[in-house]
Length: 348
Ligand code: IPM
Ligand code: MG
Image (cartoon, rainbow, N blue to C red; front, side):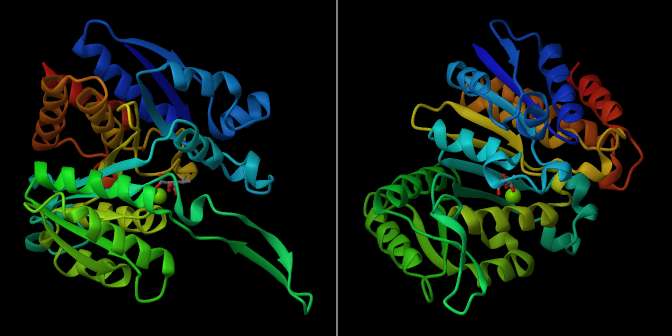
């Protein structure tokens, strides 16, 4: 099975290197790797954030292990050349629409949460975020108002097919967990959200065993801090899911801990930490590789059909933490490589 390694920008190469070390140490038969250029690194090397060779490799691969994209050097490029277009382009071109972002507190890290320990300890939720539509992919541009003012615009839309597909993902995930699904929208203001809510309710007829609730996104942001333990699975659109998943990461302790999977209809997947390229700490050995290591675990589970190997990675991360491994974001002093060492030691 072929795994594409797209390290990308900033801390991307450092964290992907540690995840690769962990995979290598597990000596899983039949895995092969090919590296490709994405993001600002690709732009600087060949003039495009998602070069054709990279896209081709992505299509051939069974799974993609992705670091991060984003580079301040590229901030003034035209939008279609910016690093972020690599991840957006991969999601779109490969039909990767179902972004799974689990957030669960490791008991050892409850103190690192921005929330009170007893509130944080109850967190065990999964955000199912749609990633092929919404305001991310609508028509966008700059124009002038009749008065001559500059105006930026981005059209938000979802069609019923897109909502139906992600709703099924949400219900199925809830069914495999604690049977609760909360659909997050802004139906009190947005037509896009009204359609979203209507379709989610239609789909719910197929899942009488799942308890469905609806929440406006502003309330959901508040509830995530007030009482995050109430959530099992949250299903939401691209934009709201982007925001809520960053928020959820701080609720569990650190954004350096949250892994994600983005799947298409054939369970081909892209696996990445939810954090970005963190250019401020790039190259300093300060990044926490655990979100990427856990993403590699999700890859083994969802795209490669190796649940025992996935369990093994998760157990190694948990025991590394239990043994006191702490990177800077977790209030410790261990380097990226030392965190990798700690996971390797726990594997064996
Ligand atoms: C994420 C990131 C991306 C997004 C950026 C890098 C385009 O924030 O995966 O959450 O907004 O989806
Ligand atoms: Mg984000």
